[in-house]
Image (cartoon, rainbow, N blue to C red):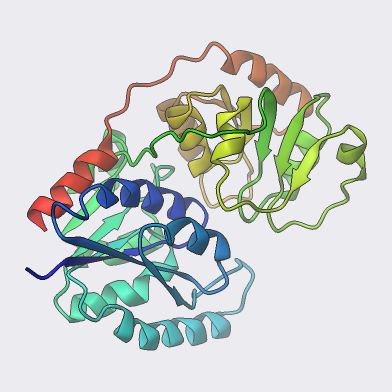
Amino acid sequence: MKDKRILLLAGGGGHTGYIYALAERLWTYTKDYDVNLVFAVPEGDWLSEERLQVFGHVFRLPKGRTKPTESGVRFVYRMAKAFLKSRKIVKDVDLIIAGGSNFCIPPSLMGYLKGIPLITIESPVRFTKPGKAVRLLRPFSELTVIWWNMQKEIHPDAEVYPLIPMPKRFGKIPKGHIFITAGSIGSYEFLHSVSALDLENVYMQIGRLDMPLTAVQEKGWNVFRFEAGLDKFIAGARAVITHLGFTAVEARLTYRKPTVIVYDKKTLFTEKDAELFAEHVGAVLVKEPEPKKIMEALDEAEDMPIPKVTDGAYLLAKRIVTEF
């Protein structure tokens, strides 16, 4: 019997995080159900490629907008190029799973034109309005996946499958530290605030940002830009300070770490989104990124209850291999 070929679209950052969570569950079915996983990631995103290639072949596609400030001309050019390249990638595919972001639009629509079923995944942070890519792809989708029941207010016909990654076991890893992560893009306001914290034994991931590191290096902090998997830094941490995104899901719901989310007013998400997301993952939200408030939040996070969340990745993977 012909293998069921599933194409998973990972747009980088948190989008790759929850595609990874679903892929590791689907991978357990590859032999019993003749499932073959393939992936597409943005060109130049070696982090996503390195993480996902353990499950299957990884294609590279142009991403329409790689920076919020890029011109519309560049966006249109890259999207057109992505549509052309998508024709080859969706060939012989039986199902497409889109993990959000504009990156997913060309291969998803190209697949739809070829009659390939589509599953679209919304961000766990969206509560007040849908993501643009998900809103565009929803009419073409067999299934729209959300994380929380409250998200039905923006996606009434969607189904709830929280895509929580499985915890990993590590050998020798850093332990007992505070892990601070600004995400793949990063935020100057966030990093300047956390850099002023009076903490020892800190690992800090700063992403793409160029910023003076003398102050934190004098404190003995371990600073790095990127790592293919942040899991080991989360797993060994005594607490995590992070931005508004998927890392908070991993820190709190996968590794059960006291978690502080620092809100950035320049983010695409509203303050209400931030409040509801923090509530759903069991994290403490800091709305004003002041060092004193972040330190108080660290203490408060120690006593926060951990929400009980369904293993949506397992349930969705099982449904995919048996129904689609």
